[in-house]
Length: 114
Length: 114
Image (cartoon, rainbow over all chains, first blue to last red; front, top):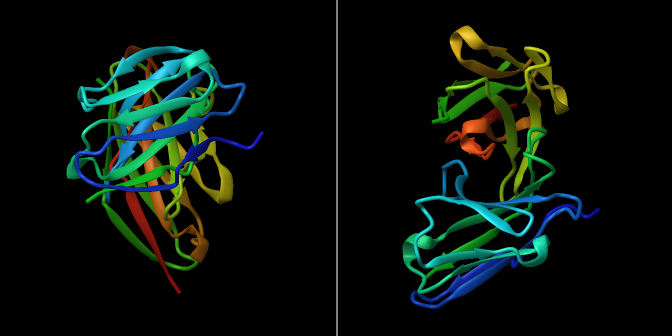
């Protein structure tokens, strides 16, 4: 078990471009979560999956954002037409069951929109 | 709706001194509570969790936290700070009415002086 992996670690993109991030959770974990963290703030919930089903999306997740978890394994988070306000660290986490024993986080993808 | 308030965005202690990081929660049902630590440019790591078994919870690296229902608090303590404890600490809450997704506080940055 290599933990939760996120790719890429860093992404610099021009405003208006589309970006896609990938998260590989711990293989036995059925739940996968996406959070966004800006400088000096705590992680903000974006969305989560139980297996392949997306169970909840935050109001923070505008229609430019889409997440998928095909086959209940890895997940992708896509941001279309990026804006400077999208610059943040995007964190992925996974858990078994309902996560009552806590989450395992990846190292995050830092997005900079210029 | 569940929420978490961390009192003090920055706390500074001398090496060897007591560490006290404050957290108050709001929840309509018995909550599950967590403390996570984050080192620069890394994801979050679980320090400890409260899941209604015992009110005093011991975690990794010598940290512990006490659940006080009457005060809706879950403060994190460590008897003697070490330089390696310098990091960002996040209190978090999870509850069934929220689908057991975890909501994080804004964080407290701990500085340890030599």
